[in-house]
Image (cartoon, rainbow over the protein chains, first blue to last red):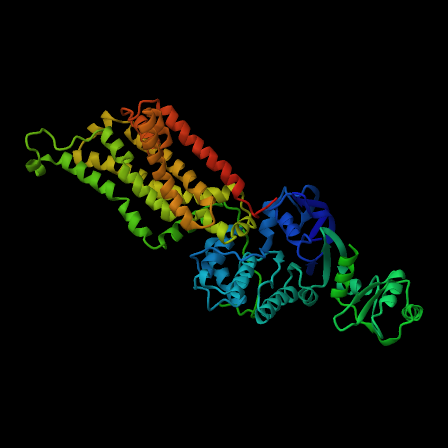
Length: 303
Length: 290
């Protein structure tokens, strides 16, 4: 297990950020998904020792949180969400500096900084002052400083935030390369579902400081419910009421498609029966492929 | 033989070491970054002017025959005593130039890290808060010691060289210790002073103004309060006066203000303690707003 935590609690004053989070995360690419304020960054910061949990305990790569922070930080690379750099430095100095602070010998750190900067696509700009870097370049730079000491575990906090579509694709490609070819465990925290779906083999969904769902992506897609998309004649208010009475969760899209999340005990015929009871005509019906977004919407809605 | 590798990421085959002084890269980088700042080199060089003037005075005092035209009846042109060293080390000009050096070298030490959110990068490394602070303080230590201790001790050696004997050393064997003691006090105080002000704002330009103005304003405040209350104790409000009082005590000279030197030491120590408390609160891997 790369990360094991049990009953982690943390609050910022009266606001609860984490409420009894217990997890066992293995290897590979793991997504930490949740809306803004779900507690994702707080979770990462507790693992890194920036914040001390009010309750609970945990281990990262076998090292105990709180007591063996130096060992954890030596083995973990962290790419924070915010823009962070040191003014007046160029990328090579910056990257090798943090390599050195991680415990690399100076010359090795400098050599490795060049390699990592080429890897993240900043090879040509590595002697340029960081103050002149664009948002996309700063994002790559954060990735470079997280990789410079070749960590066993990589924490990426919102790696594609503030990026244009092209920049986002490039960063995702980089992460995908790390995830697919290298024996490094990557924990990607994001509120962008598509990123997690692209990169990760397993996912933890956090909502309001609690674990709403966790597991392998395929398993999570398969469990709990079936998704149907329905269109009815009229406003369908009675139909939706009937479905909700059956325990279904119902969402309506802008183009008036009703998404029906059917619990495992229900079947497709129950939808037709509900329409019949409500006196509504079904004009369109299809069983939909469940996406992580649907799952996310469902678990977040249940909270 | 060059190893041909697959394009892309590959693992580093070295091993991480546990440093005896994990703060050293922070210090080295802080010093290098200071020298990259515009105008810093000018002020740094200017801070050696008092030393050069004192060096000239030492030379003149010992090479009388070359400067007989300056005598005009008196026996010696300049008499060099421990008091002269005290005067050189506590004079307003030197302190002013040291503050100017700190304005450039120290203002951004913490402020820039706060502004650019880089504290979280430091603390994602195997660094403790004290390593970070020590690394930043050592930048100030370096500049203060190279501008005070090094010239102070060199001037003492030059005095012996110019005089061609150890008479001065045998007469005042404690003087090197006084120089070391005073420069240590000056260095520790200014390190806390600079880091405290640097941690109070994210804008290093404000910090530059603060470093300069707090030093200056404390002296103005002393002048105003002294004018009102006519009490020598009002000098305790002035950074410069406290350093002068402590310096006089350490050089065994007559105290410039009519109160025990203990009070000046206490004020300087209290300021350092307040700085340590503020730094402890401000330096965190993540900003927590409760």
